[in-house]
Length: 262
Image (cartoon, rainbow, N blue to C red; front, top):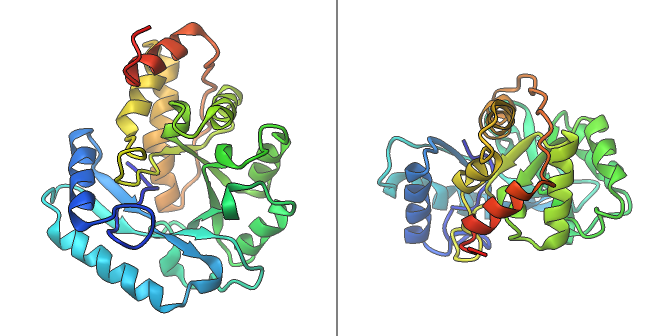
């Protein structure tokens, strides 16, 4: 189950064409994914703009054209919290009917008042699902914010690509630290249907379960199945067992998945 990806064609930095979106869905299906929530970018200050209608039309085109009918395809949004007066009242913005809203901070930077920004979301009676918390510049040096965001009630949604170094060394270090501390709640692909942003959940599953332990499999299942379903349905999250990624097996498997045989 993938609750964060960019497959709606031609509306953001995700799938550039309809064919790209269809190909990505086929790849998801081949990897065993049967439910996909595609989440185009939307600025919080423009939730009622004509852009919404263009996105919804493009989504309907993708849904009608897809050749993998066994995938349950849904539309939500990755809302950039860029306006303290943002109108987030429309429940159609959220992830299915569970009362959760996928959000991101602007410019992939750690904002000075991130807590206040999440309060904007909470004030509209949403549970914030914070996209790629490991990617915000400076979060490694200010790691305590992860715990504060979670204490406020935000759900931490890692990018699977961060675990494979797709977003650079800082994001990888922070993602590993979150897993080791049991502070990650969900893992999603953030797949953009482009060559450099095409990691799917299968790579993350293989990485996290590579040591073959029941604990690792339990954690991977919580991150990629149980908790994403809880987000979509509005039920309680399952605590994720800590996954220690500092041992050599993690690095060896990462290199293998990336095609590095050293």
